[in-house]
Length: 93
Image (cartoon, rainbow, N blue to C red):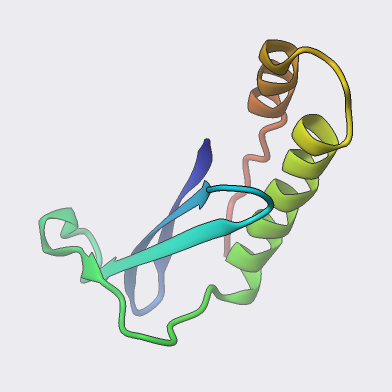
């Protein structure tokens, strides 16, 4: 279970893959490359963090995951369906 963010930044393109792993833990992989060159995406350098706009998307994901997966006793299939439908589409500046 996870989230994919594609961000066309002013200094290049970014792809972030945020996955929920065991317990309450998550993993974030950041790939970067020249604008418009997806074939040149590479893992970002150590310490690279999301910009303020992408951080807002990750905050939405955290809240949606907590609300739909962790904070309810509904059957897992219902929780996953509700979480999957809680999508935030944003035009990032």
